Amino acid sequence: MAQAYATADVMTTTDGVPLKVSLRRAMRRNRIKAVLLVAPLLLFILFTFMIPIVQMLWRSVDNPELRAAIPETLALLEQWDGEDTPPEEVYAVFAAEMKAGREAKTIGKVGARLNREVSGMRSLVNKTARRIGKVEQGPFKEAFIKVDKRWGETDTWRHIKRIGASYTSAFYVGAFDMRYDADGSIALQPENKRIYIDLFLRTLWISLLVTVFCIALGYPIDYLMAILPTRTSNLLMILVLLPFWTSLLVRTSSWIVILGKNGVLNDILVWIGIVSDDNRLEMMFNQTGVIVAMTHILLPFMVLPLFSVMKTIPPSYMRAARSLGATPLTAFLRVYLPQTVPGVGAGSILVFIVAIGYYITPALVGGQSGQMISNLIAYHMQQSLNWGLAAALGTLLLMGVLALYWLYNKVVGIDNMKLG
Image (tube, rainbow, N blue to C red):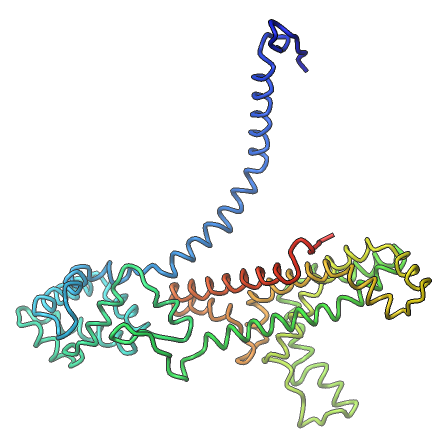
């Protein structure tokens, strides 16, 4: 390290550089080194976490389909007052863009986008695109109405004008089991189409139940491992970690074998005589199977942080409470239990956040009554290709988790959570 000397009341290093300048350079080099060391992690978080979230938020309001396919028609509809059917010019431009879209094979996207909010629009657009292409000259308004009388209704054009906006809140409206009417007002969906709110509540309920069951099962296991000798507790910890060495798909499928109507557990109950062969228990392809399988899979996420906290609690505390006259139950409730709250909080956060976004287990063993919101998000991304609605549902799920996290911080305090 360079030595410092005093020259004309200015501290310098051996090479004549002022000491302050040398220190600034050294601190700058240290900061650059720190940034370079952290850069891989920052890039990983950026590309695998932040950018996908931003894209999800963008897709939930982005609405490019109609703007890309029929831009001139939408430009004319913006000048339309919506009181009567559009003028002939709108029909003529729409007919031209329909012909071009049919040749470019993009008109189907227009029908699909409109059909997501107004039932029957896909067939209407496709039928009209086939027939209007044969019309060489106007009046196009009469030609459209001749194809289908709905083209003479103002509600049809109001829907096209509203859905053609560059940005839309319709996906969020749909995620709350509501829809836009032709006049732009928001109304509830018919009762047979209200599914998302129930799925959100079911997801929340299942996640809470799984978290509670993990606490109920994990707490005694952790307490036993904490008071046993190290060698024995390490053996038990290996048994707890064993599920991590098995594929999630295999663990989930094993519960189908165990809990199925002709599974191992039902066979045992029939053999003992608890249930008859005609009245076997339905424990699979419903919420029961989902809760059992998810509790088994997520239990280690509760055991590990709780055990790390329990291991730090000195046994002398309990002995001191007993020596002062407390009963075993009183000593446990007033001395031991409060010290484990940080571990319970950490385990609960881990289990709940993982459970609320679970997909594979409900898909395999959930049946109809055990599906969660993540399964419907996957459906819209992979099958219906309604990515806007899937993004809106995912955003609402994220906002719900953040709201519960904020509530947890207010009630318990995130500072009281410990992972070790």
